[in-house]
Every structure is written in C-alpha cells, then in structure tokens.
Length: 338
Image (cartoon, rainbow, N blue to C red; front, side, top):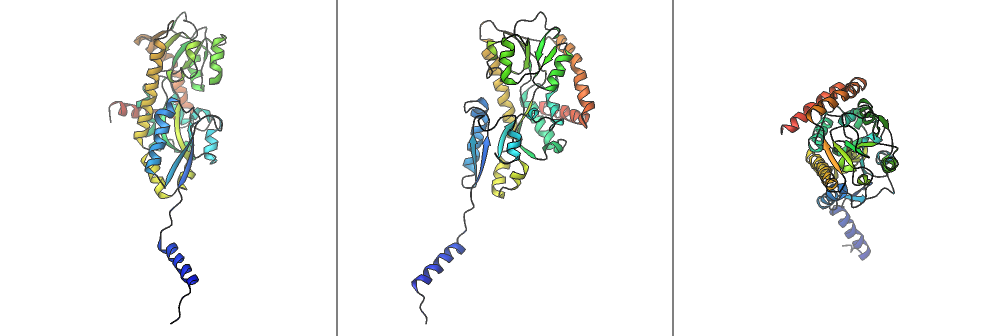
C-alpha cells in the first residue's frame, strides 16, 4: 500500500477545510453621509441610534459607517453622490433636487397639513401607494419626513398680521414664495446661510420658516416677533440608491427592510414635532420676544388668499390633483388613528 507523504497530506487536509467549511461572507459596509454636525438633533435622536441598531443586528453581515458633517457632502450634492455610490446612504431635503420631485411638493403646500408626525406617516403611505414611483425610480427612501410647518419670523413687530402688505419676506422654496406673494408680500430668495444677514441688515422684513430651523441659524438674534401658522413645509428623506440596495446580499437587505418601515417614519415625524416645540419654548423664554397665532377668522382669510397657490399646483403638475386628493385622504386616515 502506497503511503501518502506529509506534503500531500497537508494539501489534502487544507482542501478538506476549504471544501468542508463554509466561507464566511464579507460584511457589507454602507457609508452614511448625515451632512449634519454630530450633535445635531437629527443625528443624536435618529441617525446615530438607527445606525447603531442596524450594526448590532447585522454584526458580520451589514455595517453602517456614519460620516457626520458637511465637508464631504451637502444638500446641494448629496442626492447625486448617493446615486453615484460615493456614499450609500444620505439625508436629503428633496426641494434641493430641482425638478426631480414635483409630485413630492404636495407636502410643501400651505394649510394642507399640520403636525409633522401625521404628515410624515401620510407621506410614507403616499409613497408606498405607488403614486410617486416615477420620482423615486433611482432613490429608495428608508425613512420619510414632512418637516415642521412654517410660521413667520419678523425682524420687528409688524403693523399688522392681516397680510404681508409692504413687507419683503424670504420664502425658502418656490411654493413658499408664491404663498408670500398671495399674501401681498414681496418674496425674496436667499440660501439658509444668508437668512441671518438679510434680516440683520433689513434687506428682509421677515422669513417664512419653521421652529426647527430657528435655533441652528440663531434667528432669535435677528427677529423678535413670531407668528405661528401652517404655511407649508418641506419633505426630507434618509435614502439609498435603489441599484445599490438591490446589489446587497439577501441577508443585508432583510436587515435594511426591518429598519425602514412606517415605524421609522412615524418616529422621524415625532422627532421633528419635538424639536419644533423645543425651539418655540426656548424662544418664548427669551426677553423681548413675542409669539402670537392667527385667530380662526384670520386663518380663514389667509387660507382663502393662498388657496390659488394650492389650486395652481394641482392644475399645473401632471397628476397633481390626484396626488393632492390622495395625500389629504391619507392625512385624514392617520389623524383618525387608522
């Protein structure tokens, strides 16, 4: 009987180990560009805990590599950088991708929604209905949000809150500017980084924006009169490229799916309501600041004056009327607890 040499035995043994033992799959790593400071509310309360939860569940299978700050990406380029696979997950406010999300603008319309929590869930359900599929052909939302409704932050106390007559008012988005014009004001367009200086110098008399943006931009230093209202909002999403998601191993996709449900969007919307309340309460405590709301009669007048903005959007955007009707119906369902 022929004896196998020690070299042959070693090779045979190694082959047995390779063939007989499963090879561990390589862990999928997804870079998440939050484009906010590590201490931002969105990161502390939502993004970091979400990534940590996925990393615990996906140990050895999937890892989220969080990259905070705006050094590598910003709202102007994050959409393309995720779609081009520079980053695999990003935080994006859709109005900064001009022309890509016309139907999503339904959530920006004035006097349609109120609380971020209910609006965000309605937005998620609208997306899941398929009515927005053409806009999300490349992007796959993992969580959606409707940011807090915009009120009015005045540089100084206005002569009247019946309208914007005689005032230069910053409207951060197209529909906001149309709303300003409908209320008699002269709309101005400035980037967020320019709001402070425009108000400080008197270039603008007021700014239409929600409380969640108030503290980060130190608007309490350049405004002192504030009007609560529901003059529209902006959409936001945590997303990844659909093609990148589809390329993940099945085990990794299952982990993503389990952490990208209506539950996460509900949590997201509630967080925005919390930051709105906190921003309002913090400003209310400051000396020299006044916060008021519209009376029911004034609200009815404002709603009537801006209704052409809503109607024009529904007419001018293909399928807009159908999407607006569906969004309103979903808002009613969510408010009713269904």
